[in-house]
Length: 318
Image 1 (cartoon, rainbow, N blue to C red):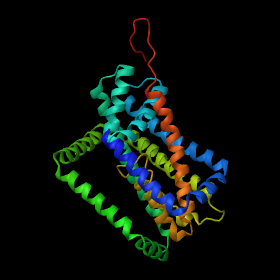
Image 2: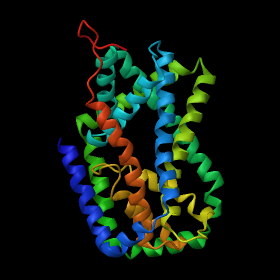
Image 3: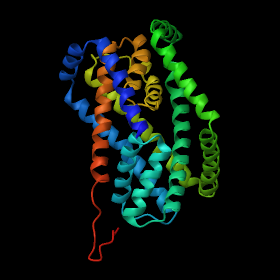
Image 4: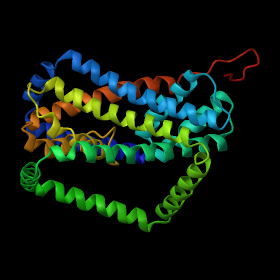
């Protein structure tokens, strides 16, 4: 609950500040003129990312001999997505969706937690491959002049991003120093080892799961790209913008925000400034991305509170 309240407050403060800086009336006008086709593509891309994650989760359930109909895996993925937004971190979100899946489909919780570990392991491998791909393909398209001008622009806002960076570093240091933080690192190490032990004898399975993760990350970046295309003027330098998309996605994972609101917009303003994208357009594109993501979170919330079907005996069934 505390994390949820902190996330709502953090997102509200960041979004309020950025919207005030770009002028709310002008921002509303840009959003009203957004191209509906790109808005629909943003929603579809966000849903595509979740669908790919659902396939990966279903694959890991199959690996542990617990797979049922794919609709169950899709439902659990959407439930896990909304829980990740409201609980303190992905680990708690995984635990919550495992509890929900175990109760609804009568699966052993310990096994489902292991499935979550395997799923996260495959996701981390896919994320590493994705970052490498972006570095090889897209970064060379950004010239040194772009990077220099972007850094100079960022320095103009040192009065707000430096305290934010210091606060983030302080929070990380406290987490590492705390018993819970050290325990989390130890658990993460065990998780990685268990994931590798379970998948190393099935390299084809790991390759397939990694491919799903890469495609899911591409869909996440695509959601932001479609949001930008929906509000920006034609002729954007996409090859110079492409490499910034995953970095903005990482910024959106900043804790104490809801679905990255506020953090995504700030990162987009900084990274897109040297590419000729106005701050007003950057904020509008990120708000479209936020709306696309929250639309699927709303579906997950409905499914979370949906009562399971009951047979005559009154017990939940698959």
